[in-house]
Amino acid sequence: MINLKQFEVWFVTGSQHLYGPEVLKQVDKDSAQIAAALDNSASIPCKVIFKPVLTGPDAITKLCAEANTTADCIGLITWMHTFSPAKMWIAGLKLLTKPIVHLHTQFNRDIPWDTIDMDFMNLNQSAHGGREYGFILSRMRKDRKVVVGHWKEEAVQKKLAVWMRAAAAWHDWQGGRIARFGDNMREVAVTEGDKVEAQIRLGFSVSGYGVGDLVAKVKEVTDAESDALVKEYNEQYEVIRSEAKAIREAARIELGMRGFLEEGGFNAFTTTFEDLHGLVQLPGLAVQRLMADGYGFGAEGDWKTSALVRAMKVMAAGLKGGTSFMEDYTYHLDPARRMVLGAHMLEVCPSIAAGEVKLEVHPLGIGGKADPGRLVFNTATGYGVNVSILDMGNRFRLLVNPCDVVAPEADLPKLPVARVVWIPKPNLEIAAAAWIHAGGAHHTGFSMAITEEYLEDFAAMAGIECLLIDDNTTIREFKNEIRWNDVYYMIANSAF
Ligand code: MN
Image (tube, rainbow, N blue to C red; front, side, top):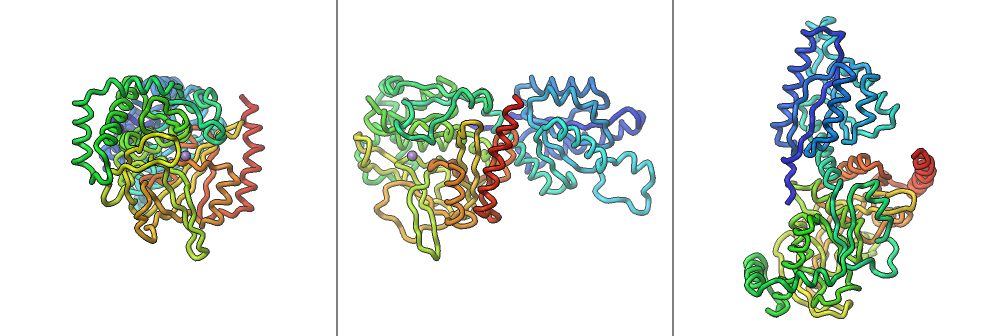
């Protein structure tokens, strides 16, 4: 469902006519070589397209206008091989709607100490050309990533790759469609927000549907279709504690839901257990399998988290480790090892599973529906990150908290849902307090494939606030950051 190779990143080099045609030919040649190396690099997830060197304002403006209207162009890698007087960039940058990364590199890695002359110095001017270009971006308040180092270095290419994956997710949000089956869980605050503001700022739209619209699709599913899917379940999972009738119903819900989403061109959705009229079970298995195929999901009408999970899945496409909708459920408050058990009633994505995935049917304590099918599994251990997106009234806030995913202390034989146990950074005491001060939700996007760097790049592209809780966080400084940001966004917003 998610293919990052369809996307183009344009490799754009700035220069000027002052150097004469011979030098410009060399600049062009060097740039083409770097673009080709990036395009062929195993670290780089998208196509890198070389663009001939830019030497004047008209060419720059034309290129920016073309980037805006090229559907598969998700952003620009910009590099100043030489000096490129930055007033030439103003008109183009004013137009440009695609994200920028400033690659602050040099064609030659090392200074040729024995042979260096003024020709070499004039050709290799990134050290000051990059500063002139950086000034105009800062002067125009254009946020961008700055990557410093030699272009062949793996760490440099990996930083570009992170930015590209974030750009792909940002591109995916533009015109992205979220189906909201039913509305919000009635009295819940954090899952709500301004959907019109979200569409203006973030690009995706949220469309509400009566659950009856979904039920109609489920009713269209034939016995042959549901039997075929049940066969697939039996091949893929260890099916235990199940009755055939419940599993077949889960298959019908999956097929109906999948059909509805495909027909409507949706890439994310929400459900709510307070509105299941006409559905026999709460969709559990269906949601889990759709998430595994790349759909964003939020429970209880949580459209913001659904959009976030989708974005994180785009960023993570093809990487090791999964990405899921998640909820902070229960604590382990042993002072020696404070931990969180994350899960949801049913809807955890099997992309984060380690070991066996079991398909089980159990009663559900709330919702008053038939016993639903669900996949039950444990998770791999290692690095993870929890992310929340909030509507703060005057801005959207992304809240990011890396964690160590650890093994549960025992088997949890009676817990009938998929589960993750983690220790947040820097520890539960500080992380939970900071999270709560920031207004972070109980719902999150959880990933073991992407890091805070992806989310910081993504927030910068979206122009939204990004708060990070990590090993450097103290509550005193974190509260100050929130206070200062409150003032910043009041001023920044009044500029529109
Ligand atoms: Mn929930």
